[in-house]
Every structure is written in structure tokens, then in C-alpha cells.
Amino acid sequence: MRRSSPMGALRPILVVDDEEPIRGFLALALVLEGYAVVEAPDGAAALARVHEAPPCLILLDMRMPVMDGWEFARRYRALPGPHAPIVCLTAAAAEADAAVRGAQIRATASLSKPFDLDDLLAVVGRHVPPPGRPPDALEEQR
Image (cartoon, rainbow, N blue to C red; front, side, top):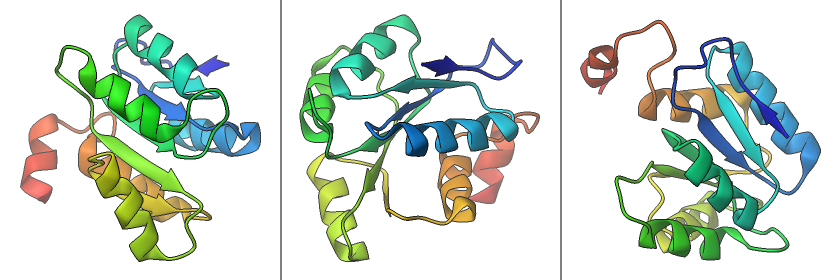
């Protein structure tokens, strides 16, 4: 399933998670913030979406059927660049475990499930300026 904001010209955020309720929640939260969103239920579908609409950010679950997050990241990084940053979403209980999984795929950030919506939006906002805010405002924030 795909959802997008009214701002169709924006490069989308790709949300990859096999659990539809989580994927749908993430997509809805991002759309309500004004982001364009594309969804994929597994790594194989995500690779197809990358070719259809190159994302500005990828929110990637690690454990999925068909193709998991590790294999997706390997294949995605093998494609000609540029590459979008990847945020690792994992059910790893400890924050340190989430960071290890993120490092394994060279993710720019990681979040342990369940995560707080404000934490998710903060991570997304560090990588992609919220719609309506100029990109240079992102640099000033760092």
C-alpha cells in the first residue's frame, strides 16, 4: 500500500515493515506531519519502491519475511548512488542491541520498538526537514 501527502513533488520517506499496523501507523504519523510516504511490507518490495520513487529517508524494520532488513540494506547499497539514509527499526530489547543492528547495516540512526512517536519524529526531522521549513534550517539545527 502507498500513501502520500498532498505535496507530491517531495521525495518520499520509505517505510518498510512487515507488520501492517506498525507500517500504517508510521505512514499516517508522517503524512500528518506533511511528509510524502511510500510503504513496503518487506525488503523485496522496498527495492522495487526505491526504483519507482527514490526516497529521501528509509525507515527499515530488520526482521521481515521474503527479504529482511540486512539483505535489503546490502542490495540497496550495491545500487548506484546516491543513497538515502537508513533508520533501523528493531524489536531489540536493549538500546545497545538496536545500535549494533543499526551499525551492521550502516544505518544513520536506530530506534527500538516500541518507540515514542516524538522520538521517531525527532530522528526523521534530523534527516529530512519538516515540510515548509527550508533545508538550510536543518543545518542550523545541528
